[in-house]
Length: 124
Image (cartoon, rainbow, N blue to C red; front, top):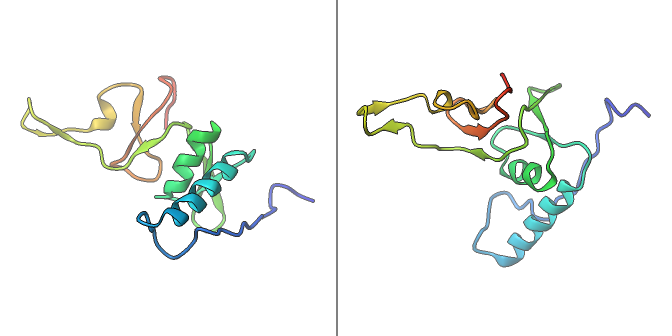
């Protein structure tokens, strides 16, 4: 078996078409899935995949980001992402590039405005 090209499909009991945070049973199934996925050796995530961001944090995993149909790219950090960080600098009275303010915060690989923590030596 060639593990580089093997695909394992997982039945998702919480996959009900859309998020249903008001339903506790749905939340329990979603949490169970995230926990079980965090126990994997390798994780492949897609853009805007909230489960993936939670799973990589729980499992201390550095996932592969799915790009297109057949390509993946190893992300530079296993830290969680911030989808909608503030970008307005009140002192300057204008927007700033929040991914360039400090060396340990960079933009996502898959979302130019989002931020994540990285090791200071990490480069995109």
